[in-house]
Length: 113
Length: 118
Image (cartoon, rainbow over all chains, first blue to last red; front, side, top):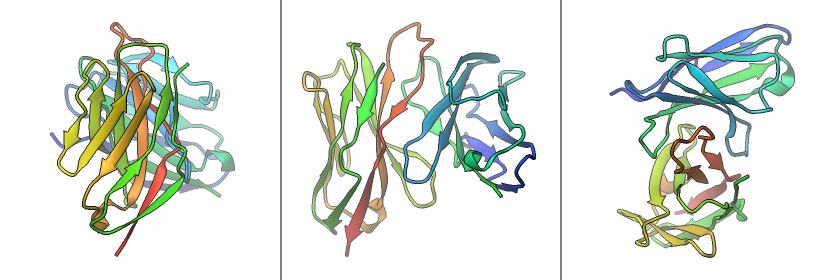
């Protein structure tokens, strides 16, 4: 069990470009979550999957954001036409449906310049 | 909707002393989980301690313990014998235990930054 891994750890992009983040959850974890965290704030929920089904999306997830988990294993979070306000850390987490603890990855830092 | 409130943005404690971080929450549910997560400067969120709402006994993990007051909707974290490595942001968090649970997300407070003074 290697924990939740995220890639890339850091991304600097120009405004208007698209970026994609990848998350590999702990194996056998059915649920996968995406959160966004800005400096000095707590994580804000974006979306979560149960296996390959996206069950909930926050209103924070604008049309420029899309998340997938095609085979119920890894997930991707894509941000299109990035804006400076998208600069944040994007956290991925996973858990078992029957489990009561969510485990987090190290996060992917996005800086939009 | 559930909310989690941490009223102390920052706290400081002398090394080897004890410190208590406060957290209150609001929910209409009777069954849920509460967590304290630690986020050191390296930024990975690490679980510190977990409490099931149906358990009356307060959870303890080594130097970390909680004071869970269900009626008051209070969930404080006590760190004993503070160490320099305890310096971090601490987040209080709530998760529903409802089954089946489609509204399944952890709700976080804004965090408390803990400084350890040598």
